[in-house]
Image (cartoon, rainbow, N blue to C red; front, top):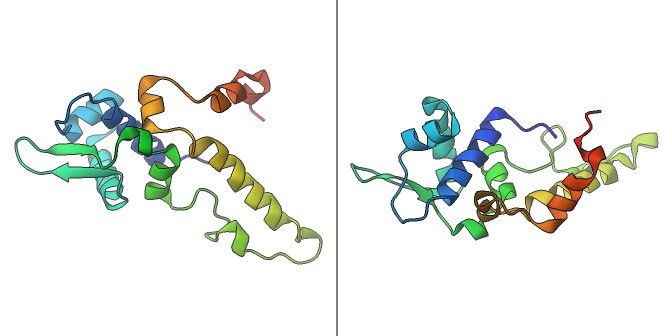
Length: 152
């Protein structure tokens, strides 16, 4: 899976918002500075996140951004979908919609399985988990395997 800089920035911005302990909105400048994200790029990302229902915004001197839902109800998958669409698309199509001929016929099932594996992690890690530094055991157990850290 390729994770774009845009998606990485979106997740980091969402986690920054999840870490806020009060109800005051955060200014985009503060999020950008805290996470080292170029401000103009972040502003475009925040618009997409607002359109995707991840954040809400308020204008004015006391304005800024807040999460649209409690952090424990927003998953990493939700943020990715708001920015990039489906977790696993093949040439822009959902894997279950694909058909392949001949010896490639079983490939659809491989792409569906890939999507299921992504969901196993991304749909079970919330912004609250990340903000607290407390990943679910299922994720921790995957990273405990030294093979998970090897580049292939």
